Image 1 (cartoon, rainbow, N blue to C red):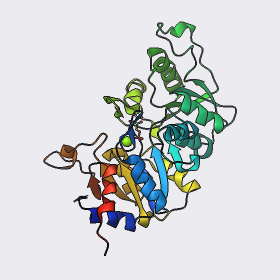
Image 2 (image 1 turned 45 degrees about the vertical axis):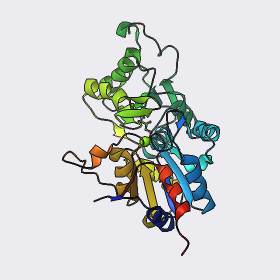
Image 3 (image 1 turned 135 degrees about the vertical axis):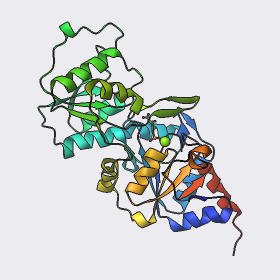
Image 4 (image 1 turned 90 degrees about the vertical axis):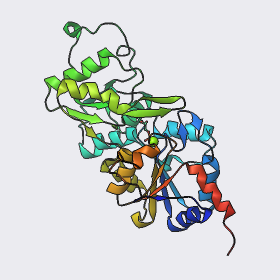
Length: 303
Ligand SMILES: O=C(O)[C@H](O)[C@H](O)COP(=O)(O)O
Ligand SMILES: [Mg+2]
């Protein structure tokens, strides 16, 4: 049963209990490019309390460096080494887990941030933002030549998705059974500033269907993402809390990692998803409406 935070003392108790605070981004800190109320103030409180702050996003459209720019633009203190995205997790998975030979390439369905993380890991790629692949012209299989060096297909959120990209990725997956199939994440929807949009999981779904196989997911809730964090940041799981807006990624990610979990209702999950007859079996430790609720600690009466 989740604890629904409500009094200033509730929020202060969490601030006292946890030393490391791992934040999801979309739906917790912002929706699209719209900052969520109270986020800057609460993160400032955590910084003043010398808490360890980490950001873990499944959004593969940006690299860690371009996320740092977004944090700066929104007035949130963040350092590149505190930021982990599914684009980075996918690039690390290819270089350090699969150990993709440098002679091999990746076919990318995704955007500039994913390409940047692949480049930074020394991985060659095709597709992605290449203008030749970003076309609405009919795809001609007769004119397509398979690149024999492609040994993996990586699929992330791609707002320029089209039939050519899906067709090329399908060729690599279907004509080479040994071709790795990697999804940066499987979020079904994306919480933009104006409402829900299809998420990365809805971009890879046509490929799953056509190729008849499921990808390896490197984003939350997979341990690959947590392994990337652990490789750079030391923290005590007992004193760490994961704050997210999606049950089957953020909260499950925290539970898989032995972390405490706090669900906020400013993104994907609604009250009906955690109460009543159709409540999810994924139960967070704590629930609050919004991260900004932690401003209530200012009202805690001195002992
Ligand atoms: O569709 C997606 O890729 C996700 O909805 C989105 O980007 C999730 O980002 P997060 O909530 O993990 O920051
Ligand atoms: Mg989110």
